[in-house]
Image 1 (tube, rainbow, N blue to C red):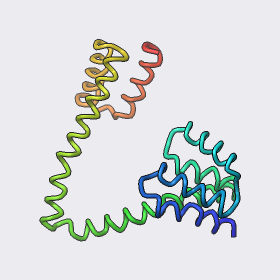
Image 2 (image 1 turned 120 degrees about the vertical axis):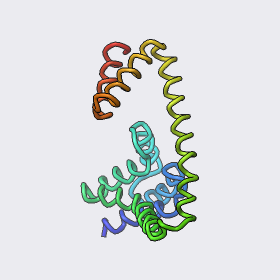
Image 3 (image 1 turned 60 degrees about the vertical axis):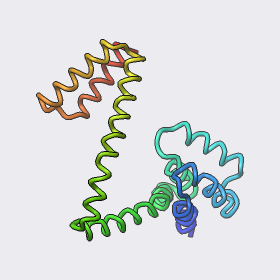
Image 4 (image 1 turned 45 degrees about the vertical axis):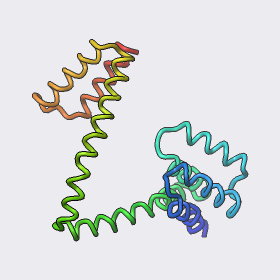
Amino acid sequence: MIYWEIFLAFFIPGIVGYGGGPASIPLVEKEVVDRFEWMSVQDFSEMLAMANALPGPIATKMAGYIGYEQGGVLGSFIGVFAIVAPSLILMIVLLSILLKFKDSPRVKNMTMMIRPTIAVLLGVMAFSFFKTSYLSSGVWQMLLIAVISFILMERLKVHPAFIILAALGYGAFFLG
């Protein structure tokens, strides 16, 4: 029975928590503190503070922690699954609809209109990264890393993950 309760405690906020983790925090609190009485308000606020300090989506961290506290490893798995299941189901349904109409001129036009938007967003993000890099490490360090990364990826076909790790190592040893 506890696993069903864990599922409900996180599936319902997953459905109605439009806006991601921050929007689902009060909904999870209502389920966990008021409905099932697994935690006090004080315990919930401490767990929320800890979850905010860790990297990753807040809703899945809350679901994993509370699920583990109530039902062990299986409870943690059920909690995380329940919080992401509504989005997962919706993505599968929408993707099946998109695949069904992939040859439709409207769908093709829609995807053609989205591409420039994505390109602009990626360009803005890259500019922001370069600006931050320039301000924190200087122009010569930034150019050195950028040129070497470009050569490694484009000429030598080194996987980007290895380049990221090398850049992190370089930054840790020489810029830290």
